[in-house]
View (cartoon, rainbow, N blue to C red):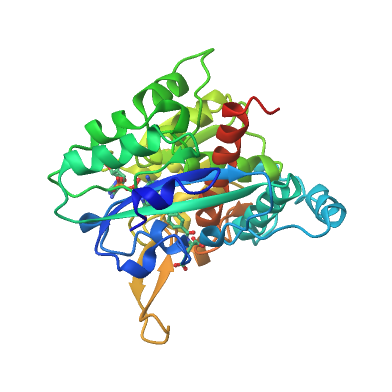
Length: 349
Ligand SMILES: NC(=O)C1=CN([C@@H]2O[C@H](COP(=O)(O)OP(=O)(O)OC[C@H]3O[C@@H](n4cnc5c(N)ncnc54)[C@H](OP(=O)(O)O)[C@@H]3O)[C@@H](O)[C@H]2O)C=CC1
Ligand SMILES: Nc1nc(=O)c2c([nH]1)NC[C@@H]1CN(c3ccc(C(=O)N[C@@H](CCC(=O)O)C(=O)O)cc3)C=[N+]21
């Protein structure tokens, strides 16, 4: 756990709160990309992280941000964007793979080109930590001018009230976009949230960068969680899609998905969405991260999405793989939100 004093020693930060489960080696000096993974004992751990920006290069080891030595080269790479895809136009038998890993790398390189550095400090609390202790950590990051972003890793242990905790994060540092004020603004017309939740923002960013037309399209979001499904549906609606939300009580979900030009699936059930659920030419964004046993894999498991990838790629015009699709985009959007926050706080345009 990063001690409160270590959070204040440098000029700027994102703060992350973690209940654990996690060892002391998960302090700010080690890679923390793992801290985001759902494969750790999610129900028994939670985390809070403080991120800060400083003007000199400071590679974000936690998310593998590297300083950019040659900005010109990087810019030319970012201009070279993936080709246009129109969901309705697709005729190819095999879907274009929407490469989240590559786009996330581009986004990280854009940040590096802006001379951005982010430091990340993790507060890793025991799983029986009290709500009061959690709130104390949040309050200390709220009040630390060096901290520009705070992320409380969900889900929280059951004895802690999620609402109280999320409400406590200062809205100006809510880089996860989960504060009810941010979500409320996302839901209302002509209002702008200070931050858009990272995973749904990453999904929309992938659609934009792959030239997928959203306006006027039929979109189906599978799942309605506060983290992914609900904000993803709000974002698609803001992009002028006509949106249906499918959840665990939906009868015959395939009747909805078969009509969709765009499907965002965030359920957490391996291979639930079959090829037969998909309209030919649809674009599929698979958020699901599901471990399935695999004795051949060094970890003893591999990750698959909610969508039956091998079936879907024969039918869809474009699809995100798991791993290497939405996951890396979530992390890139967290960086992006932290950059937005630091610029806003320092009146830097
Ligand atoms: N790639 C990334 O960056 C991220 C990936 N994830 C992954 O995305 C998945 C979803 O995460 P999260 O939203 O937090 O999960 P939640 O468990 O909070 O929500 C799951 C949603 O799926 C719905 N659902 C469950 N079963 C079915 C079913 N059989 N048919 C239709 N809908 C169903 C639930 O419905 P109901 O509301 O009725 O219960 C609920 O709305 C997980 O695999 C998670 O690991 C999550 C965050 C980031
Ligand atoms: N407050 C909060 N905000 C979150 O954004 C949040 C959270 N809590 N709780 C947990 C979920 C899960 N999540 C992931 C992020 C990245 C990958 C990711 O990068 N996955 C890699 C796979 C990595 C591997 O191979 O292990 C990929 O898909 O390619 C996965 C999952 C964010 N979450």
